[in-house]
Each structure stands twice: as structure tokens, then as C-alpha cells.
Length: 124
Image (cartoon, rainbow, N blue to C red):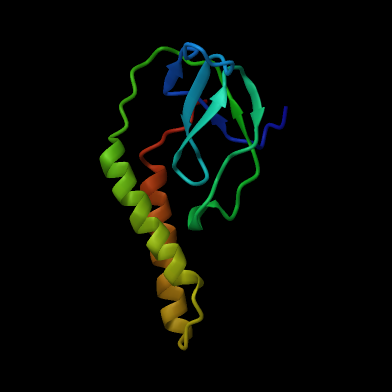
């Protein structure tokens, strides 16, 4: 297992759906794009299903066993922060006429991404 990959704990365990073959699934908050991803239950490395402006730097993550603690993330506020970060990344990636403007947009994007990441603490 790669120790450089972030460890992600599922916030929700879904039982198998009646009449479906998919089995138990885990929902996680992706540490790369900050959206909810669903994976088959089980610990180990996973490839993220990222899309969108915040997903350009994805590698993989490691699912760890759920610990039964309740989900405390304010999903509405986290989604609002994620949309702000996505807009900041799109603005940062557009060509700029002024180096000062490019620096300001890069700083704003970095701050917005950090604000989103603060909603999702990583397990140790």
C-alpha cells in the first residue's frame, strides 16, 4: 500500500439493494474533488471518480474501515465552498494580461481549495 496516498474513512455504509447484484457500498468524501464518491465496501486503494475543475490532480486514495462515528460535515456549506473553489480554479486557469492578476487569482484559488479541504478532516 502506498503511504503517500490519503486515507479516507467512509461516512455512510449502504446495505445491498434488494434485487441488485452490487452488494454493500461505502460513500466517501473525495479528498481531491470534494464530492461524494461511492465504492464497493472493503479497505484498500481506490481510483477516484473525479470530474470538474478541482479534479485535475487526482491519483488514488486508500479506504479505511468505517468507525461508526456520525457524519458531522455540513454538506450544504461544503458544497457552497466547493462551488466557490471551482469558480476560482476556472478563473485562475484562464489566460491573464497582468502577472499581478494571475498571482491574485492563484492565491484566491489556493485559499478557496483550503477552505473546502477544512470541511473534510482526513483520518490518521
